[in-house]
Length: 166
Image 1 (cartoon, rainbow, N blue to C red):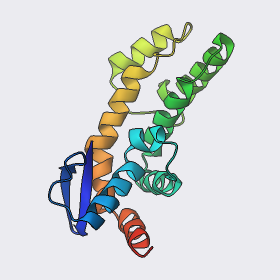
Image 2: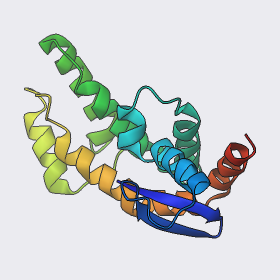
Image 3: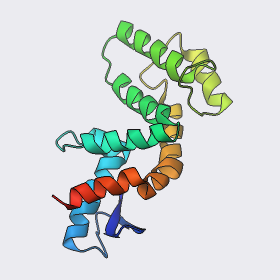
């Protein structure tokens, strides 16, 4: 897992949180919170932490960049994986497909045509892994593209300032 040293708001130093090399005690605490706040997997997997402000800030940033569908799709897929019954799975798969995957979807995600075609071909018999490839692509897109810009955004900087003042 990577994190961010916050000793200089203009420069974000990536580090391995397990080693926490190069950061002061305050920076380690802040960088752990910051990373968990904003990277989708940790802030969803670690339910014991109060991470709602980070989710809201990241979503607000994506909305400002007209790419909110990415986090909404990712979150929908995480909820979809928790489904226990076939009828609920079919209903939820169709909703996710209609909202994010279909070529006429109102919140169409940016995935390659092969992935889209594969989901379309199998949507009549969905499994818990039906959206895994698309979800990985969207996660990669967010991590590679949206998240680095988010770290430089006024939204993120404001949250850091509020966090530091506590």
